[in-house]
Image (cartoon, rainbow, N blue to C red; front, side):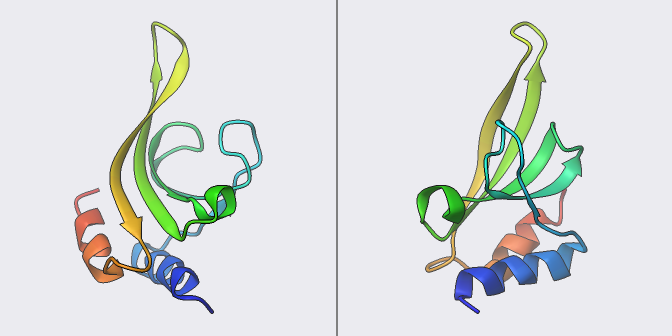
Length: 96
């Protein structure tokens, strides 16, 4: 198991949540973890590896803009599996 996969497993274990495969135009084929909210809005962890090949995770917020009726994403935390500490990421997610 790669370090990136180990980091994803550590997040699942610590948060008691699971990554799921995105299956629509919004998420593509990336692995998503819904941390707070539902499948469309809230706080998510997105695995960039299936999309870009980079072993990175992004903690993001997605809200529905009532004016445009489109989803707007805001990156909150960028996590690089090669450089960053998964334990520190888990601590940062404690406030959610």
